[in-house]
Image 1 (cartoon, helix red, strand yellow):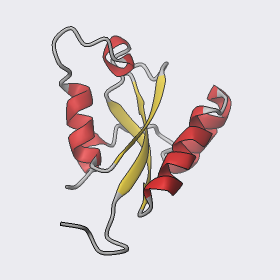
Image 2: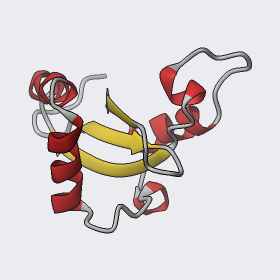
Image 3: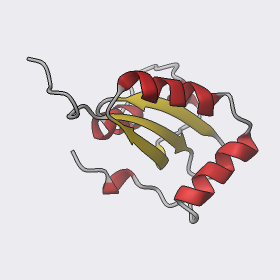
Length: 104
């Protein structure tokens, strides 16, 4: 079954660790589920988010077009830490962990 035009949901997101020293930028079509899998990795996972304990959502953007979202993820990944910090500061000045605010 295909979704109708305009009903797709894609997210570019940034996670950090508890001390906010590491950033991870990702892309998904189900943000709440993806956050769950970051927080509950498979045993012996060698994933970046597992290794550095990046489980805390501090930034996200919503898109209805996958290609646009993927392009944005790549753009942000290429930025310096300072530029990413500025993006997060504008969106979430206190760097609150937003995990529990994400709806299905």
